[in-house]
Length: 134
Image (cartoon, rainbow, N blue to C red; front, side):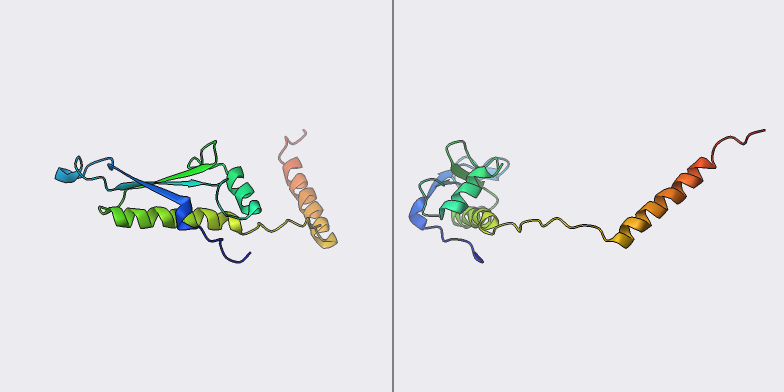
């Protein structure tokens, strides 16, 4: 897959909460921070993408397979909502591309020979560091 799968809006749940930290007069009155909840197992994502998401070692994914993203950097609820959605899209996009399988390679004969020559030279240098016999 070259592009990330589509996340349908009805699969994402938003809840507004009060932001943490300093915020002046509005901090205790306005719920501008957003909690985004996305159930991986109940979503319409392709099965391989779901498996890779659930296999991630990410603190934002609960044991039940629910992604919880908290966005509180902006002062407006709408901008925090957009940021949380953007972070969810980035998370899904990161697992939608399959990692390339590693093909083991062998060093060339000349590379092996050079390595062994360097080892013998280095060994000779170290051997000459010993005490001089009287």
